[in-house]
Image (cartoon, rainbow, N blue to C red; front, side, top):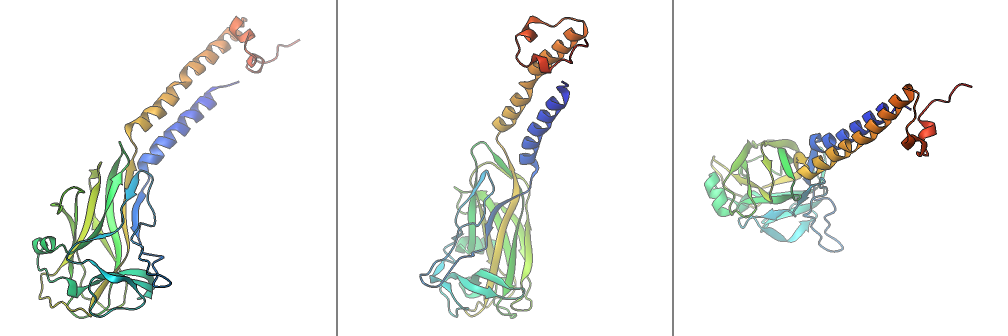
Length: 286
């Protein structure tokens, strides 16, 4: 019996486990607010609908400048809202369901500093598994306007920082969401880089460097807020895979020595005591 194919297969399988975990792209968190309902009871869904192995996302949170209105779910667009809320049902083209609505009337910040000071953000925290780290790729989202006129923050930026910092000091990426046709969904992306190994908070702030006249009847819709990256397993996972491969070497060497003994016309006594030895050697010719 040729043991080399078995040894090679074991090595390949062990390597595929390790590199499969290291190299795959993960959806670390996805906030689509699906399942939020007005009736029979007001039920906002702030949780992530998915979480990659090795990453734990928190519920969506909101800064003091935004806050959540009561009730937190509405069946249609609300005028004079007192905070952000979830629109229960389909909205815009192409249709999106259960979207987060942020009103321009909730912020009048004209700079990044003012937005941070005012707490004009929504966000979440990602906690890597103990001993693991996460390589960040990007944060993507869909957005739409309920009105095509001014009065809504056009500049949005993302901060990334330790969950214990308040507010996070590092602005990781910025994006400009121009005034456009109302009720049309667009795609936005915050490009990210680097890695995290501790609980890390991601906050999306809004402001406008142009003349902003906030209106409580004009709002911004967000949906499918998605953090992407790669979870890197803890070093012990790699060590276990290496130990698994190395444990096959003595077995391979023992079988190889047995084959050499047979070639010299002598089977070792250990092979005679091995119940499986008869399967390792060809039958002798009569």
